[in-house]
Length: 281
Image (cartoon, rainbow, N blue to C red; front, side, top):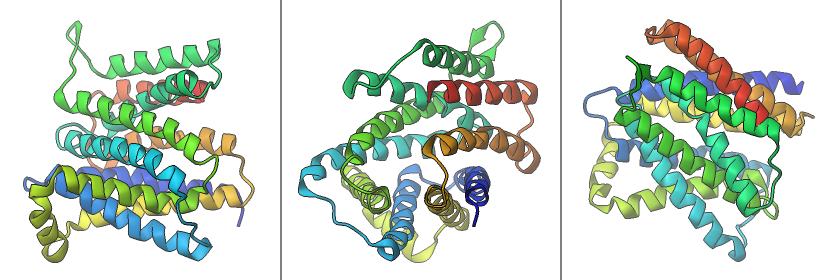
């Protein structure tokens, strides 16, 4: 199968998945902690199956501590995203996630010596302007709790990606996916140990169907992303093409979820974020 097919499936699946995350979390009884744990456990099993098929490699002992650091960052970031999506639109949160690319490139420059040039700095400015644009109201920037949580969450993910870059220099990505999701789930349970009985009840009796669909689609995105790379796509090509999910999510959220407020600004901001992230990458 041509790599463009797998890339297309990956982009569409994550864009649709973003909508189901919103549907899952806008229910009154949805809990960000419970949803975060259930999501990470479901992804562990789904990506674990792929890893077993492709030949799972155990995590070397030397990489356990760095992986736990990433797990902690992902745990906190995942909770932030699930908490944020309860109060803000899926389209807005998708635009805000572009900020994570800024955190990744800056931390990569500081900690692992990756390059930082004028083109990347221009991309950083473009992403920041886009974020200000969609949050601008009556001559001031309105940073609601959900917006702040999204920015914190994507920043934590950005830090984790920088840490992952070092880990993946000596460990394969397909084996790493279930490991890091499992660590994330365990850390979430340890930090929120009082909610373990509620998590168990949720898993046993009333799994949120929208959350299950979100997890399934998220897994499809991860699997098809790797399949595209295995089918001949270059990492740079995938990074560039995958950013179109920001624009597609904004469009789908408008059509399916009715998120039409500031539609013109959202489209402009999504285009700016996409362009800015590509320049940063």
